[in-house]
Image (cartoon, rainbow, N blue to C red; front, side, top):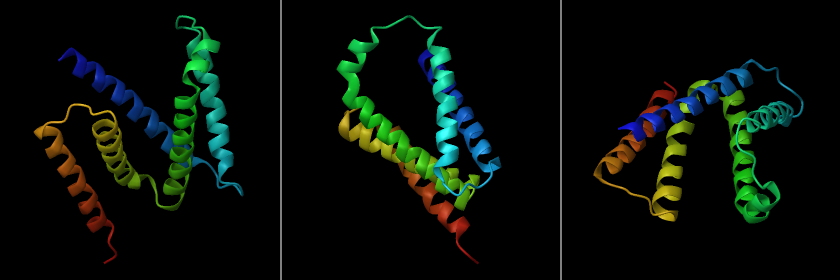
Length: 147
């Protein structure tokens, strides 16, 4: 149960951070270049990460980068797609559409990355959760359907 509690706290931390990000993006003014807000927020994020890194043990950064540059490039491209998708989703449709993003993210990450690529554990409860996520997307579209 302790590992679930820790996982829950980490997921809550990420969810609160995402909520703060969405709030900031919705409050920001529209720019002629849609990437202005994303770049500015990423620079602040990098600064905060650099500050936080000071509180963790030092690593051999050169060796780490040498051994992990390909996954870092892949993850960087993923973050790029995420932030661009967030920008257009939230500025054109609103924060309520996070429901759609959240469920689609859960399905793509859990099914494609977790189950298919990494062959992580999957049981009947995960299957039921996946089916309910698919039902959520369907219900979301019914709720957003013009009357």
